[in-house]
Image 1: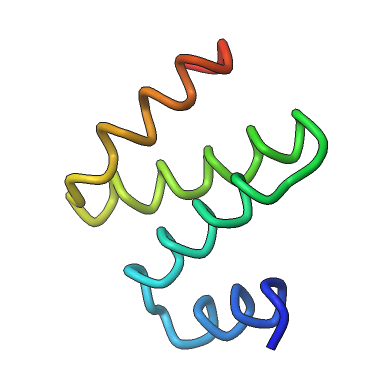
Image 2 (image 1 turned 180 degrees about the horizontal axis):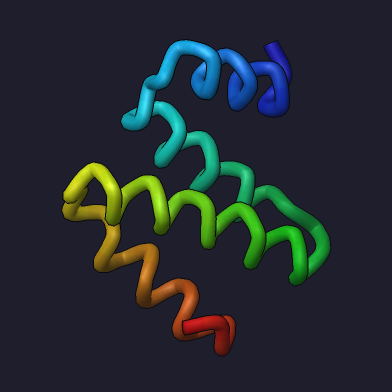
Length: 68
């Protein structure tokens, strides 16, 4: 499956762990800076909502982009 299909499936299943990982992956693979920020923000929000420790690293990535 494609990354987009994987994201849609994770949303449909309510799989927060997968959403964090997939949005992080999408941010790393995105070509445009705006898209990188968009995906990274989503990964961060899902990590915050889940109380996931990855939120700290995601926040650092957003700070590096000047988005947090």
